Image (tube, rainbow, N blue to C red; front, side, top):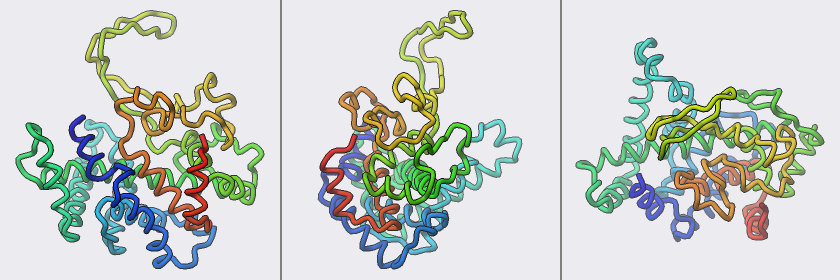
Length: 324
């Protein structure tokens, strides 16, 4: 996985790449041509938001603006979220309906890669893997597009939907209302004003409270003693376990009054939303931090900014000034 992360960064996710910067800068114009007069009420149009995210992700990675029907297929990486999280045993009880849906989605996704003739990207990436090189480029393409689809498209769609809901003072459908308090930002006007003040901190606070990915799995690197209900238990090395990002993001010792929405928090880079402290001085201490975190944040800003009329130049100026 470390080698694959390095290759992903080299070919797709390095924000210093000329292609990345150029394509990211072109997104606003592409969205404007296709969606010329967005309105705030469009924030409720999940389908359009999801298709916009899918098109933006594909364009930044491959330089191709996909057709509406292809974007609709790619949104399956978001709309099938329910099936992705079900345990294998449950999938079997459901006659593998979800498994078959995801298989079909993977086939369609690779088909879209072939349709836009960008297979060479995966051929070149696969060559860089050395002894981990896949026997067939199409197999490697399927693996990478699974990551791009599930995390890049699905996760970013979820983030855009959460921000869109917060801007309207609505609780996102998949969130728990009792754990979200909008506080002083109790009208759409106040929410939009807070976003305009600093889009990045607004987004970071939103996804701290309602992260696109709520948990992840890992294994213990060494034998560990854990206290549960007042008793100590010895956990062996290699034990599979799950850690809950959404709970970590509500740690009162890090984020006072954690259920209250506050985009002016000074330490939002300590939130573990992207599986690590994105932007913190110790970011490198999180080896599994999302490799596409910059891409995700950039696209959320671009899509939401398009709807609200926030110019890319204004957004970049705020980011350059430093926000968190």
